[in-house]
Amino acid sequence: MARDAQLKQRWETLVEKLSMRFADGDELDLDSVIYLVGVQELGQLHRRFKKDEKVNLMHIAICRLLEPYGYYEFDFFDNDGWPHYKLLQQLPVLKAGEQSVLMKEAIVQYFLEKEFID
Image 1: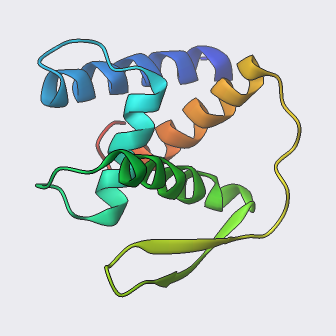
Image 2: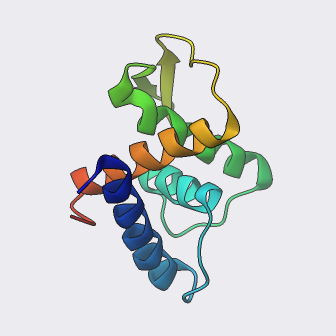
């Protein structure tokens, strides 16, 4: 299977599984999936987050997702248990579609590693 077709198929499978589990079947968008990764990485699954915390959760997710690509490196957990990352190299300038593909690729890889999808 071609790489793009495989990514598309895995992404659709992932979105379907996450949507059924977390959105009563309403299809989650890319930002929603990134948010879920942030909540997973923080590990505080059963609490409500304020607006600024939600932004921070998405930042955590992006750092974690792009860590295997060499853009970020985990640094430390703060006193509240929030992970912090340091930037290793600037992200390349990408068009919106290219950003979306990179993030979907990183998310699919993350959930493959977690054995949530195969």
